[in-house]
Image (tube, rainbow, N blue to C red; front, side):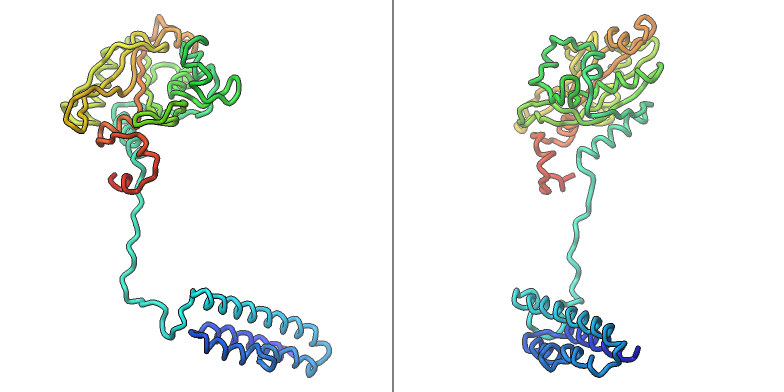
Length: 334
């Protein structure tokens, strides 16, 4: 009994083996006649059932039907490949295994990721820890604790991506200053990189989503000199010795006094101009009060730089949109 079933299985194995050897339409037709015609070996399996013992017929019938379906399915698929031109009607190997392989591109980190890694490495050597926080924030962390009043233009719903009345996509990584100070006693020395979101009109220098890196230092006796020294050391390392930059007086609700940081750059015609990189200043006492710090005891400074702008200045990129278009002609340069 077992030998008879094994003979059925062997017919199926032989058919599938022979089908793999077919290389043209003529051979395919010869296969069909041998195995699937009215007197073919696979078709004939059902005719052999009458010669078997009654107790073996159900099992043998199921096996014969299974083999027939499998071979017919493989044959039909093979035939469709020929009709579609997917299998060349030629004999011999389908490809030359002695030909050299096709080169494949080597992946690399995106330029934004590379820049973030370099920034964190520089500030890590300067003794800064790293802080990460949520991209969906509440108004307290995004505005209130940062001394941004309800009437301030920065809180206008048209200038933010609000999710509901009290929740929005963060518009600045300054929110991490609040979250760190809420859970940490001074001294504090952290940098916080991350994405921020503002509904700006897209042009060569603006995007609705971009990256910032925020820094915060809080301790007793911290001064503006510490801020300027840190920024100067960072710029000279990141851009190279002799890079020209400046403080420009400005105003931010969460720092007082405040300044803009500008770098001297050249346009494509060789003309010098100042490019804004971000803002900085001494932490406003109201911010300390919002997190329970004593502003009479502690002082601190903070800055926030646009990571895309830092990279644009370093690598001579003139359009921020290039970072996000996924054009390999641009990305392969870095």
